Image (cartoon, rainbow, N blue to C red; front, side, top):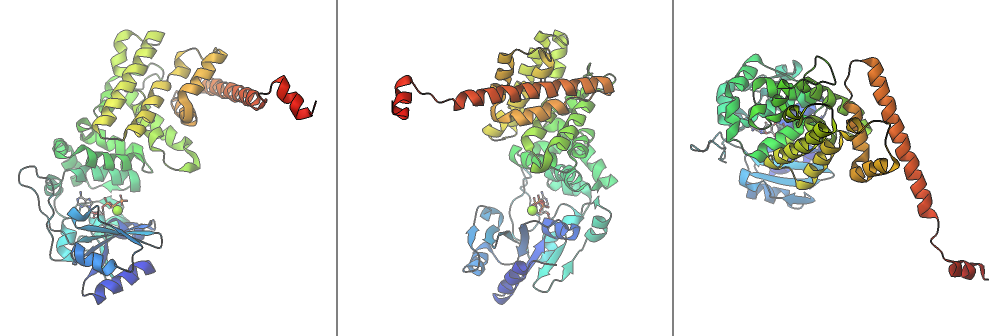
Length: 417
Ligand code: ATP
Ligand code: MG
C-alpha cells in the first residue's frame, strides 16, 4: 500500500509531464512493514520544476539539499524528499561524489548502494522496478551491491559504513563479497568527511542491534580509521571480569545499556557513553589497578579521549559534553568505596550528574558484567542502596524547600496579630 499523499503527488507530477517514483529506503521499509513518515522520491523534473509542481500543494518546502538536486516538502505530517535522477559521477581528484543529473530511473538505480535500496515504485500506477534482485535479497535479509562491491566502495567508501549500519539497524547479513571488500578497502574510509561518517555511525549505534554493527566495524578494520579507541580495547584485560578483555566487556555494556533504556527509545548519549566508558583503561594500566590513583587516571583519560574523538567526528558540543560527563562519572560508584559514602558524597554525585542522573544509574548498572552471580547481586544491591539514599536525601531537601521562609513579623501579619 502506498500512501494516498504519494499517489496524489504522483498525479500532479504526471499532469505536469514528469515521472515520479518512490525509491530507496522508502521502498525497502515499506516492504519490511516499517515505513516511517519520511518518503524519498526520484523524478526527471529538475528542482525548479519540482518546486513549481509542489506549489499550492505542499504546506512547506525547503531547499537545503538543492545542490544535490533535492527539494524537501511537507504535507499532512509526511516529509517528502524529491531528488532529480542522478548519474554516477565522481570528482577525479578527491573521488567525492559530484552531482550530475541522470537521464532515467534505471541509471538512477544503478548508482545506489545496495540492491535492497535500488528498487522503485512508480506513481501513480504502482509499477514496481527491481533491476538487481532487491526483493530476493530483502526476503533473505541480505546486503549485496548492484555491481561489484569493490567498484561500488571505490566510488563511495561511505557505503562500507552504511553496510555495517544496515546490519545494526535492520539485522541484515552481509554478502561474503561485501564483507571481504570492506576488509580489503577499509582504509579508503579516510577519504570521507567526518560529518558523513558521523551520520552513519550515529544510525548504527542507534540501531536495534548496535553490537553486531560495532563488531563488523572492528572485524573489517573500518573502526581503525575513525574510532581507533574501540579496537584499542582488545589488548586490555579487564581485572574485574576474569578472562574477559575490555573490548568484549564494552560490547556487553552497550547491549546492557540498550536493555535498560526503557520505552523512551534509543538513547544516543547513553549508548555512546557505554561504548566509550572504558577507553581510558588501556592507558591506565601503567599506574597500577584498583586504587584511587588509577581510578582517577582512568576517569580523566577516558573523559579526555571521548571529548577529542567526538570533536573529531564533529558531534555537537552539548551532546559531547553529556557523553563526556557520563564517562567521567561512571567510575565513582566503583572507585570510592561502595556503601561508605558520606551524605555530602551522595549529594555531590547527584549535583555532578545533574540532568544525567538517571542515565548515570543505567550506565553504572550496565557496567556490571561479572559472571560471578554473587558478586553481581552484591553490586546491584549496593547500587539499590545508593539510589535509596539519593531518594531519601532528595526528599529531605524538598521538605526543607517547602518550609516557608517567613520571619516573625510576616507571621504576625498573616495571623492578624
Ligand atoms: P534511512 O532513511 O532509514 O536512514 P535510507 O536507506 O533511506 O535509510 P538515506 O541515507 O536516506 O538512507 O538514503 C536514501 C537512499 O539513497 C538509499 O536508500 C540509497 O538508495 C541511496 N543512497 C544513500 N546514500 C548512498 C550512497 N552513499 N551511495 C549510494 N546510494 C546511496
Ligand atoms: Mg531515507
